[in-house]
Length: 337
Ligand code: 3AT
Ligand code: MG
Image (cartoon, rainbow, N blue to C red; front, side, top):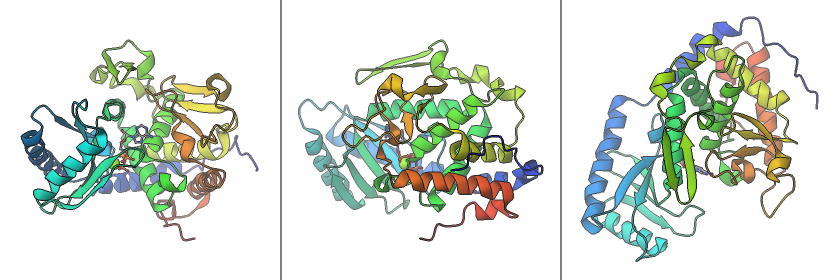
């Protein structure tokens, strides 16, 4: 593998910014779509509280972290005292309740890694996954949303990266590629490394948000209104950052030794985390530390085949941005096997 670490990006890269910003804007969900999501949440709350008066429903995932493109599914967490019923029993009961309220395609997946009920609301056409007591996901949703408010380039970059990943077929965890959550963490990490930095490391700052979630300490600076100018010293355009992002994962990241850590605001060593060997199914071929559940490697879904596909896609994207005459089209060309 030739490593092109020293490569400078093309001289006219900044001229492509309007094209990428137009793509970004076209992906943002319309106000009325967000309104429909809220309405659905309100009616689901009513329904659930009839059976369980103390239960709460929280939105999490991209519909709540501001990284959702239009027509996304929504993710909901049912927070409920589960000392009387098992998770599976709650899911099955929930599925019954939803079905009798005419929600469509109701399915309880009790044996999934994260057990959920899936369903579709025929009124709004919105599909949704409901999980039980996954409060760490609610906490990491807030962290991502807070990062997005510091510098708008994060949301722009992440939208384009998610759109690229979906177009190229590398946003499929069941096939060994990365989740949207992992891509957003890679974007945050990348912007933390720019010189000057575009994003701070919120978990290294004074903790203004503190919560113990399922035994995990979640602590970070969440008064992001006060640090809106953090990235102002850096005026890199979105096209330049996009090129930098792919170039970094294609040619600069040290896959053999480094762990991407948004929590630390930098790379840390695999050695330090004892992520150097394969243990069970965890191969640690690309290591992305979860910011709160730090023993959790989001890259663990990646195997020896999919790491090759991923890295080839990063290289393709970097090369398209470097040499192609029409990068804002070629970058998103659907992958055809
Ligand atoms: P999409 O817009 O749906 O592609 P998303 O951010 O909603 O992006 P997912 O639907 O894959 O992503 O996941 C929903 C949320 O669940 C996102 C994150 O808060 C949490 N989550 C996902 N994967 C993990 C994981 N491996 N570990 C911890 N939390 C996770
Ligand atoms: Mg989602």
